[in-house]
Structures are given as structure tokens and as C-alpha cells.
Amino acid sequence: MNANATIDEILNHKGNTVWCISPDSTVFEAVQMMADKNVGALLVTDQDKLVGIISERDYTRKVILKGKSSKQTAVKEILSGQVFHVGPSHTVEECMHLMTDHRIRHLPVLDEDKITGIVSIGDLVNWIISAQSTTIDQLQTYIAGYPG
Figure 1 (cartoon, helix red, strand yellow):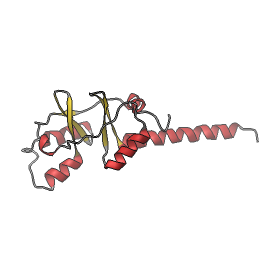
Figure 2 (tube, one colour; figure 1 turned 180 degrees about the vertical axis):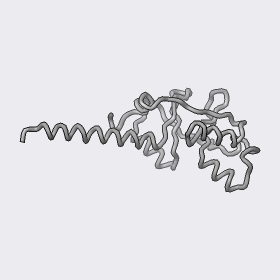
Figure 3 (tube, helix red, strand yellow; figure 1 turned 90 degrees about the horizontal axis):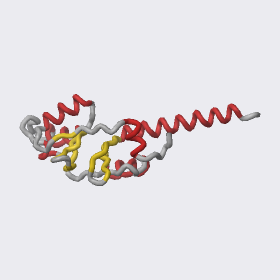
Figure 4 (cartoon, rainbow, N blue to C red; figure 1 turned 120 degrees about the vertical axis):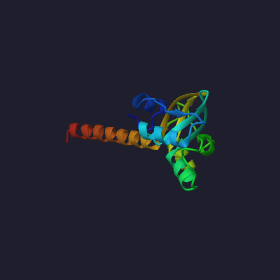
């Protein structure tokens, strides 16, 4: 594993399943889907076009704290419309900078306008930890095999 791999490598390793919801769905349906799929965000699509993203953070800040009803509020009313995204050739480091700079936890991956996956900050951190462990193991093997 390379510590500064491309997002394409990460998607090939973790999979590229993406969960999407319609902007006309209710926030309750979105939260239920996030719970069922064990994810923290859903891409909001309209006719396969990315129009936004909805996360657990959007739910807590834009529904719960504002006293709205999740069963009567449409996803389109609270989604994050400015969606930062990356392409398959972006690196882990580039994505981590983007996420840190914009305080986001999920990045859709688009190849031209086609959604090809999504990565979370957790995916990137796990990748880096695995890459570092691999490097440490290789260095220990090299040092142990070096005649003293």
C-alpha cells in the first residue's frame, strides 16, 4: 500500500458502492437509509446527476436543532448544495487537504460527470494507517535481515 495512493486505488480496495437518495425524499427516509446502510452521508441525485449531499451533520443542525420534523422535511430543503468532489486520480493527500480546508467528511468521486464512488475521512485515515504499517513491517524485515 502506498501512503499517497490515488482515490481510484482506494475505491478498488474498499469498493465503490454509493448510496443515493432523491431530493424529494423525506429527511426521515434519508436518516433511515443511512442507518440501514451504516453510512454517515448519502449523495443526493436527480436523474443520476449529483445535486447535493446529505449527512448526519445536516440532520442534526438543520432539522433537530431547528425543531423541524424529519417526516415532513424534504431532503432538498436541508442538503448541502455546494458539493466538493474529486476525481479518481486525486491523491489521498489532496483529498485530506480538501476535507480539512472545507471541514467536510465525505467526498464524492466523479469521473467526468459520472459518480464512481465516495470516500470518507475514515477511509483515508485507514488507508494511511495500513500503508504506514506495511512500511514499518518492511523496514523491520530489512533491518532484521541486515548482517550486523
